[in-house]
Length: 107
Image (tube, rainbow, N blue to C red; front, side, top):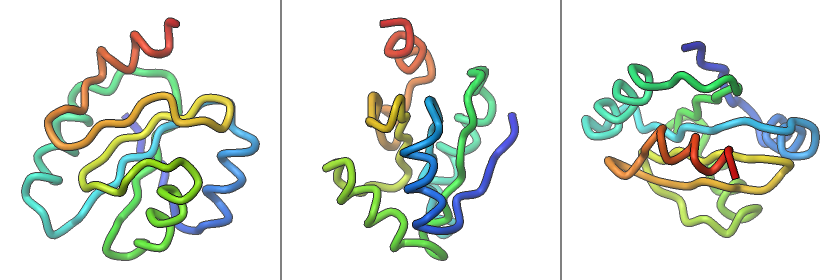
């Protein structure tokens, strides 16, 4: 698995407009639950789409923009999958399920 890094609001807006399929993992580097969830995502991620890592302590404004753009309430840890600019999957904590993402993509 290879993490891309989400660093700016502009980068998110460009991804939303230009990338047909991508995921964002919101992570708090101070939270042990977030660390465990990140590790579980890393072990199970076998999807052929870019996944972006968002450090919430460094870039909370990006998370706020994502919440505004999607209407999805901010949580941490949280995984959101975007297809053609729209969020098609959203889960947080232990509810993040890679198999469920695969099902959503198959629809």
